[in-house]
Image (cartoon, rainbow, N blue to C red; front, side, top):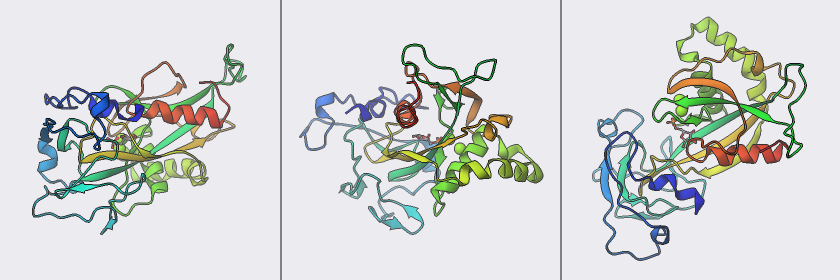
Length: 279
Ligand code: RP5
Ligand code: MG
Ligand code: MG
């Protein structure tokens, strides 16, 4: 499926580790493939066991497919299989076993805030695409430091954290650099975006992410929610400043020809459809 391309990228991100090549017709676990010899790889930073990472399996037996203490090990996509104590990627083979750069065995839950506004011309009029006749949206996009790709400023849901908080927190950290702000400045920033983020938002996707960090036993999942500044006077008036894992931040036009990080193009397309905007 198209949701499982970046998960098979030849060289694993942040390493010189090659994945065992998996052709399209061998992705599904139900396709028997006795010659399959996936590369074994877990990054040193993960093996060092920071608080966001699980221990290695063996003595450690996490409870899969349930809420395991405060760690959410249920998948948005239903029950996943566990083989020899290791969860199996619900979208099939990736050419690599272990966790790579991901902390959790099984699903690694993230949230993606898609903050949008209508593009305006110099005279303050909405910009319409001449071919589709539809108005153009812009979204707050960050350039990820890890790979240099443009992305939605998403991040991991902390254990026990509500997704609505993750959405606002990650946006604040990556697009407003709240981590570098003083407590007073941070409170002010929060005030100014509280209204937008306390609206329910428009959920455009929930499920597996085709992330290049995915492995046979660890994968990204997300909830992508659109927060739209219809009148252009809430977030649009805030100065954007890249922070945390973002190297740059900008209001970017929706562009179906650009290649965004992981499955982010797909999420933007969903937003455009829902809002009857150009894609
Ligand atoms: C992607 O990785 C998700 O869609 C989300 O944008 C992001 C979360 O990971 P980090 O930004 O914390 O690395 O799969
Ligand atoms: Mg972050
Ligand atoms: Mg992030």
